[in-house]
Image (tube, rainbow, N blue to C red; front, side, top):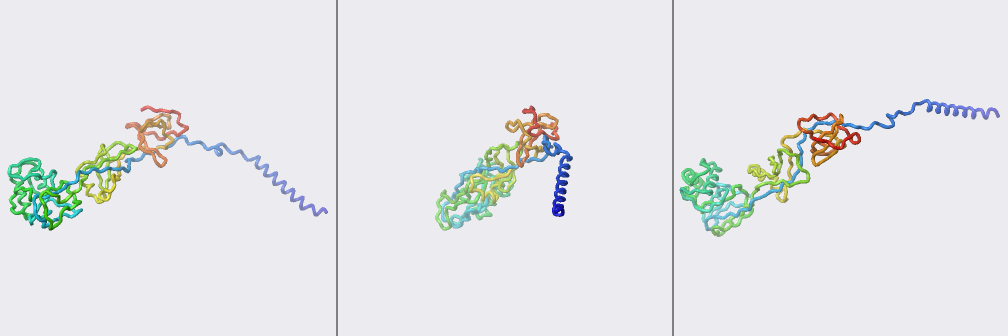
Length: 343
């Protein structure tokens, strides 16, 4: 009987000893410190400087001149025509022959409306001078119809087979095309057809005059800006209107612009020409917002005025007033103990 209970007694005593040991260990261990149970809240955040160009995508609304209807100054059978929809007329080249008589296209700022004789003056004469200068003739930009103008026109007539090539400006020998050029959208007559003087010969669609920035809900950061429109880099004036003739012409000649004409507006990208130095802070550091102005409190407790630039990806970009030192850090949320700031 004694041998049957001995193993059980030994097992009981071992278990009791382990329990007593565990209890003693628990009592002797130190209590967890407050640092482990409750981490200290973050009250400040170091600021970082960054370059900011205010990049944004905008919409531009194109404005076009009215379409131009071209007509010839003589009647007869169209024996030759270079009119092809989508193919620009070349200034100084023959665009048609009427009864085998060549008709030369000239691109000018205003249409021709009269024959010119030596001594004639006016805007149309100066426009003719500009067209000849664009073709490489060395003549003055302004002045009456005489001398070098007549000689230049005679050379142009000879090159195109006009007879007589006497330098006289006759409406029958020339057809006006817009100075901006442009390809005809419609050809009104075909070779072999009878043509009546002054009737439609071709239609040239209006040319691009300007691009107007469509207002958005977010105002851009002030300053000179550059824009990329249809793959072309141009300046974007503060007015929001791109009207510089050279810039407009480059945009209009872009294949990307032609592809975008089905839409009322054209997408463009724009940014500041000179990037600004900004400071990145957490949104929790910003308070007292009024329009584009706000406040931050630096790590020394001073409330500072800032200008808001943008906010994204968990950070807000601001600038401090010019000539003011930028703090090393700003306070966050509950650590902020002021509600306003003054410049």
